[in-house]
Length: 554
Image 1 (cartoon, rainbow, N blue to C red):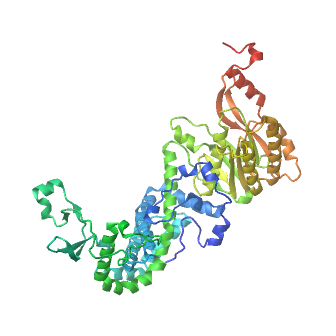
Image 2: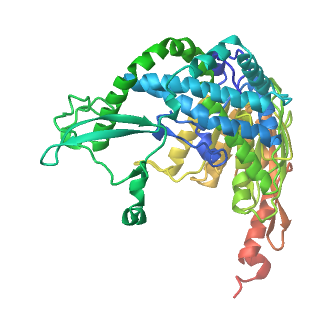
Image 3: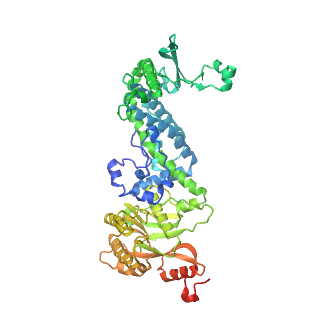
């Protein structure tokens, strides 16, 4: 069996290429609230390493196309999703047992290796039965189908099934043990041993069962719970004098359950050591190579199913989630129609959202977005960032249509509550954050700025913003600067005429629906704003237009 099958990366996509396609920074993940969109459930309590959204971003257009094709098939076919959902618990078990095998308890290692092979057969059959009669189109699912088909039809797989079936002990069916305990004249336990290993679990008795005596007729009903403290055993003698990190601990803090578990493991190991020893060659032959592929798929399946859930949740609200057309990074393409903000849509499910379009091109690589307060500027900028970020995960995006190129990084400079440091003002902290970003910013990056320089006066803010915008034009990165510094809108020719400019600066404006009433339309248009009109609208709405009224009202 090939052990490099992936649902997220093309065939032979090695570690060096993965490293080369990593993004520059990940602060944007929290800034854009991406973890609330694609929700990955961690299972660290089971020993599994954390699954992080940041592990799945890529700047490679080939990888993005590969993932989008797989995702499209899953979104469009509930039966395919059901196959992955059915396989996931079994794959999780393989992953868990791989972790145990790295431990030091021989019984657990041996039994887990056997259970892994049983689970390996189970999950291979799940994939085979789910895919054999289905025509799949994505390269990822085709590779998975081919792998399981070749595996099931091979002699090695048939021999493994035969070897497992010949074992006298079905370790997967062992559910409980029966223990016999002898007591002395003082009702103290003097010796104990294993009486039987069972395929049925014991269960707690009921009050009615105890009163009527019915519980005594069922050999698998417990009369009372047992809290063992084996006589004569010490923490050191049974290997419990250190915790999982290797630190010493006194016997007084050793849990009773650990004493019981350790004792039973010793008894089971002694009872089945011959069976386990005879099965060792089979385990060695099949274990590492044949199960590794499913360990790799564990995180990938969880990620894909989380993406599918996100897309279907948004569509259930009547919102579009579109598969973007992929262009190469050198094309610098961002042509998206019908953009909306996911978080706003979720918080206001019964409100018809305003959709907006955005295109980066030769006349506008970086935009100044101005307009009235509460006109949807910040919401739009974050929506644009989310569209680009989801694209880099190989996910559908919240829009009606999208043609996009990957970027090497997404940088955000939003006003935050921690922009004030001891001994420094908000404006100084703000500028320090921004200069760190600008020193990393490249031609193929995206930068989103929201009300930067608001911590100083208008004159100083306009001057510094002009310097920054001129530099951004020379760098050539794409992005949006949401600002109330309307004077900047008239300076785009100056920014664009600076020697070495690679990305032209252009204007976007948040439009008013009714200026007299101060009604916002939440429409974003590619026009030069009339900053004074917004100020006069606000003044009139608040009753501060003294020269028009001759008074401030009553």
